[in-house]
Amino acid sequence: MGNFDLTSSKHHITQARQWRFLDFVSLVFFAAIFLFLVLVLTPLGDSIAATGSQALITSTTGAKRRHHLITLIESGRNLTLQSCSADAVDYMPCEDPTRNRLLSREMNSYRERHCPPPEERPLCLIPPPVGYNIPIQWPTSLYKIWHENMPYNKLADRKGHQGWMKKEGAHFIFPGGGTMFPDGAVKYIEQLEHYIPISGGTLRTVLDMGCGVASFGGYLLAEDLLTVSFAPRDSHKSQIQFALERGIPAFVLMLGTRRLPFPAFSFDLIHCSRCLIPFTAYNATYFIEVDRLLRPGGYLIISGPPVQWHGLDKEWEELQTVAKALCYESVVVNANTAIWKKPVDNSCIETQNQSGFELCDKSDDPSYAWYFKLKRCVSRLSSVGGKLAVGEIPKWPLRLTKSPSRAGGKNGNEEFESDTRIWEKRMLYYKKTLNLKIGSEAVRNVMDMDAYFGGFAAALISDPVWVMNVVPHNKPSTLGVIFDRGLIGVYHDWCEPFSSYPRTYDFIHMTSIESLIKDPLTGKKRCNILDVMVEIDRLLRPEGTFVARDSPEMIKKLDRVARSIRWESTIHNTEPESHTNERVLVATKLLLTLSSSSQ
Image (cartoon, rainbow, N blue to C red; front, side, top):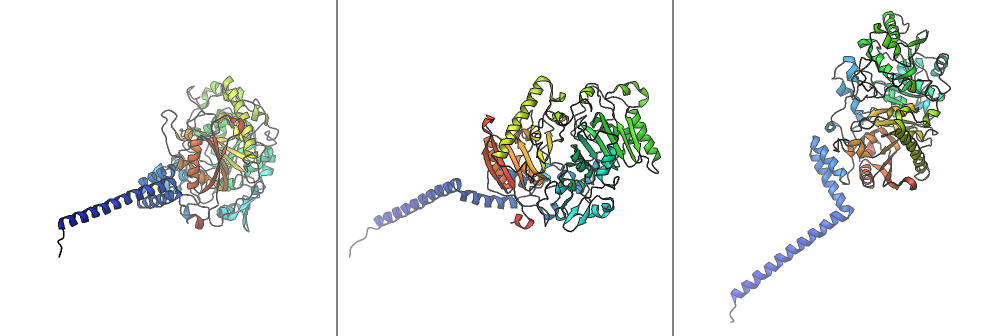
């Protein structure tokens, strides 16, 4: 029998095992490289990452979860936001009754804007109510809307006999009445025209305080008067929600401790029909705020208490005393309606030492009105009276295109005219080449998030729309120019939610999102893109359109975020003559029911 070399055999066995181990290591290495390439270069990678990220998000809570979700979506991960709960269909973050009822009642502070900190704002999509329909188009919407879009019957039950609104089948109908004009807003307006120049273009911008369902502002549109109607949030009545669904300019707002978010001397006419504002309270602070907003030579109408109202003789006498002390001319007192005209300068107050009112210091900017406490001094008119007075400024529609004095001298006039021309060209391109619905009956309520001089809105003046021109509080204060040209708007900070109900705008336009969220001094971001886009989604009606104009890099990022909030979006070049390195994002919000949005 032969002998075996045991040492040699063991060596070969060991060597074979080493080769098998090396082969296994190599296989794992190349498999890892292959998997890495798959994850990076194919959609499968995004899908797997999204699944893992979603699981991670679900396992975290609070601010950490929120920050992680924002980081993932803005970095391009293929994630989609979930729907909020069914009880959030009318959620307004800064007018949330559950938060605000715990605040001070002094001067109705608790009914003003009080926004939650960013980490407490839910990152979810507000669903429509069950049975929601695409809104009825203008002008039919002035007279009727879908009941199921806001199925709240209390106003109809309480005010139906006064002609506010009634429930009829699948609709709410609006006969056009009001508490102080039960025969209808049209007859009421006809009566007012005996005393003030409603027609003819002398008046254009109107503020309706405590507006109800805004029938007054709605019917003034036939006279080419553009009204900002406002009322505080009322969880039982939803007045502003009804007004916006009807296609009437309206805004959730409360006159409490702060200036209203409008520049000085902006409204040609201010109207209160049973708005129940105590104008003479707190040393007439509220009357003084109305005076700040009213254009020199403009008209103030108070209809209802306390004007010749039974049991309110003292309050009515005080109101007349304050108006006289501020040198307002009494135009007429007819039954329970009083009309005054504001003086065109301060000469009367300066000579009436006994009036009890002082002019504000010359350093005071009466147009600064973002979270600014009410003052008890009268805004100075000496430098603006003749230039901004009703009857001195051009009549409508000439004032739309004539450069106002508040545009800012020679360079300001040039910028104003340039902005007007630019937007005329852009709007032609948007309509003809991008085929946007704006200008059709499908679009009524429009918002420009960074309005500057209002050129975007001016380019739409022939269309059946109204535009809420928003001027960011941290940018040059051009809102006065917008009002001077006969348009309307508000101050706002886009790092906070807007004061409107969900689903209230058909079309929202934005330019340069970074300029809206960055601090102009430090250049640091004050908030994130996802929060702004989620807020736009809250404001936009289903099947509504969002258009953004920005750098190619930012448009790509907005496109990714748009898909995460379940919009359909496309990217386009700008008009050929723009000569700017920009792109245009056009996105459509889909109609997602509660059942489909939870899938």
